[in-house]
Length: 136
Image (cartoon, rainbow, N blue to C red; front, side):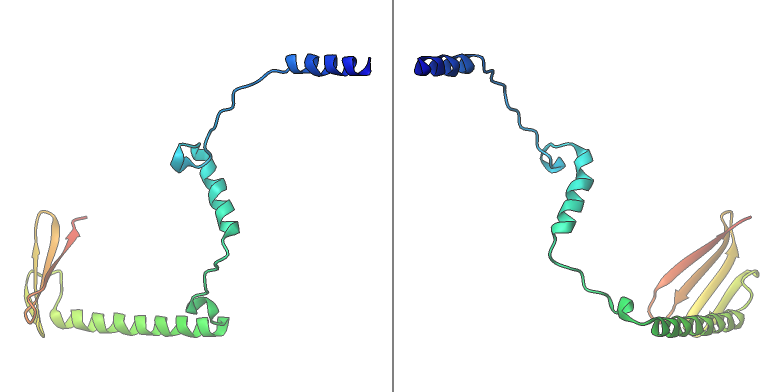
């Protein structure tokens, strides 16, 4: 009797089970997944990454060394501004039209519809550049 009851329960349970269709949806947006998964995948890969980026030489310096480097850069910048200003004064006033020569540089200044045009030619190499200061 126990065996028959067990078999009835077993077959009765099997017939009442329902199957469903499984579908696969990729996570990775590179393979057709949802694009909103990108940040999650990136952060997951970053956490699992065993390789660590080394610190740059600038990051390894102490605050005192960084301050010294910054001060050196500012001093060199001031010196270059002073030298450039002296060179510009040696060339002439850029508000006046004409051609000026400074060493191997030939500077031509003239007014156009676009504004003040400054052509600079390095006579030793043949390199040329043009600066246009727009009208105000």
